[in-house]
Length: 241
Image (tube, rainbow, N blue to C red):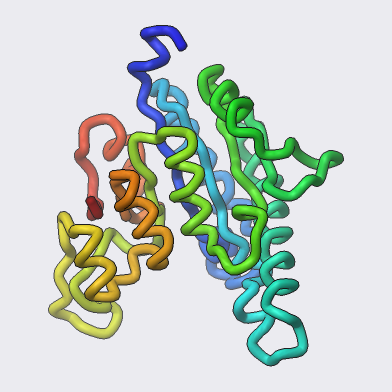
């Protein structure tokens, strides 16, 4: 890796599948895809290396699919993994429409649609300025896409993982229920775990803690927020470290 490449920031951005649905609550809203693609393009234009993980909740969630016992949890989770592949392909199309070079890497082999996840190949894509979308979770049931995002961020040696949500950051209590809820600028991994502040699931937070990976939580719908965070730590966000 050249000196110039070493100096480039590398981030992994995690989007929820539900966010892609927009106001519909289900499926994929093209306007949301276009908006996200524009935000990612601004990062690439600033020479930030970008990996992406997208959930599959806008199509199906493994836990929900298995809750009545008709579908086993293992099968439900594999169904959820396939949903993330659908979202990844949609995001690839939106990013390419914006002139970006993109690769989808899946933890489950679907060679007609995307590449297999190979760590060294992913790194090489990032070094060449390509956006890499990591699909199909970890390839294993019982692990969330939050855990996938943290795992891939650790593997590609990202500077941090950004969880792009519908809220500005982490609050001391639910801002939808409590008018006096306060946003926290910083929270420790241990506090997030012991106080059950659902930044990410516990497995994801524990993995981040073990690898000293900061978790940034921000509002994906604040235009320019991702770039502000990455460039100079401005913007509106909370950080877990």
